[in-house]
View 1 (tube, rainbow, N blue to C red):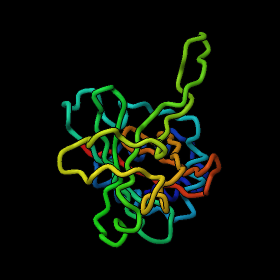
View 2 (view 1 turned 30 degrees about the vertical axis):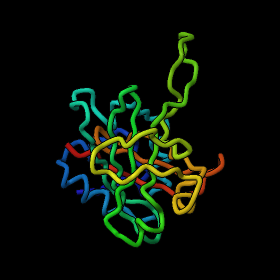
View 3 (view 1 turned 90 degrees about the vertical axis):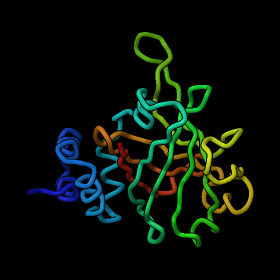
View 4 (view 1 turned 180 degrees about the vertical axis):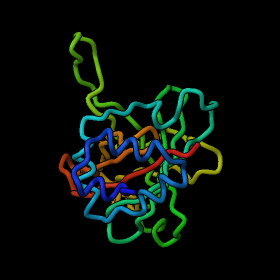
Length: 201
């Protein structure tokens, strides 16, 4: 049976990629992501370009107020590859979150990496305001602690957060019902770094 990596390398269509991931459970999705080589991330991101996500994709509307949702996976960097992004719906309706790191060395180096999630606006065909692409915005951080027990909110324009998250946004596309992929941009330019994450129940 073809793996996700096999499909990416064969130039599969987005529907084929989604069908493989939607046909398995959370553990199966994590195994599929783990089988990707670092060189697969860019081609996968480009393969699903245009597959939009919205705020409810990261925190479903039925999620109780104050409950955070984890999206876990891997990035294309050579070190500290585990990704654990935690999202919560804010009182104003937008999403706030941070990057949870189990590794204390990585955490000390990067800081918590707080972010706000926004939808880049674009006109829709009927003239109303639509969403061009959803992005994770590290230029902005939550104005208060989003969830009890999370680390203190620190801005990403000062050390240590500026080393990793300063002046950065992640632009997101949907791969399947639970899996999305992002590309990191700094100062308005791609830094050719990607990550893929799967939403937990």
